[in-house]
Amino acid sequence: MFEGVYTALVTPFRDDRIDYAALEGIIEAQVKGGVDGVVPVGTTGESPTLSFEEHKEYIQRVVALVNKRIRVIAGTGSNSTREAVHLSTAAQEYGVDGVLLVNPYYNKPPQRGLIAHFETIAKSITVPAILYNIPGRTGINFLPESILELLDRAPNIVAIKEATGDIAQMMRVIELCGDRLTLLSGDDNLLLPVLSIGGKGVISVLSNVLPADMKKIVALYNEGKIDESRKLFYKMLPLCRAMFYETNPIPVKAAMEMMGRCGGDLRLPLVRLSDDNRAKLRQALIEYGVKL
Image 1 (cartoon, rainbow, N blue to C red):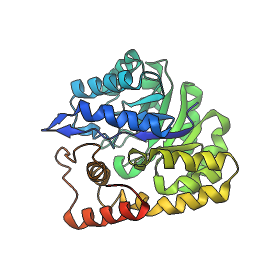
Image 2 (cartoon, rainbow, N blue to C red):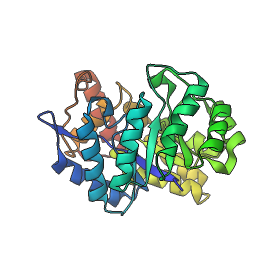
Image 3 (cartoon, one colour):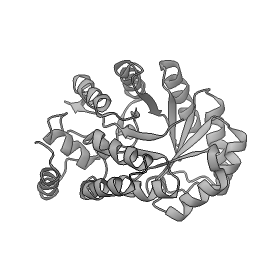
């Protein structure tokens, strides 16, 4: 169901408030770029610094602006199962096509706790759910055998955003779960390897900046034009790396500002891109051919 390119949307701010005027332009650029969907209020959307009210309103606004032209997968995960249920059920009421559930962070539950956490959230909703396994942010790795056990308990879990960076683990997930679970890359710079092992797409940071090009990599690969897909991927790879000069979403916010898509403001404890990295990012964008 969830294959292709999904953009992990930034949350634009102006004077420390969400800039909904900028959001409208961002959404239109994504639709025009041909992505399959957008993911509001994930890590790239600075979800830890949004209030509950902002979190829910942002999802509502994105659903309204998209207006069913592409899919909307709302980030509704939390390290509190109750909070994740609250956000997920609200997002379902707003008309999202699915929810994205990150590993519970900081409290580091055992595998059986992870299974119980995701099962409880999934059973509170009827829309599809996507797992988000990112140990580098959460301090806990959801293992393939545990994922398989969860699928038996919660059939509306249909995909996983895999951001372990461990191709062998991703292969094990596909080996165990097969067609029951769609695997999406959670790292832009691993998109091509993930496609090669059976992944079906990406939830992307860089597609905020280059939605059409990111979509083209996946489309070419799926059409069997592997060499063309590889060539474009390697052309984009320096920019994929540039998105992580500093903690995401600091660089992508800077790139969006350079392109005039939105302001570069972030909420503390995140801060604006350093001058040295800003100069490097600008050069990488220019070398790729992005008009600034």
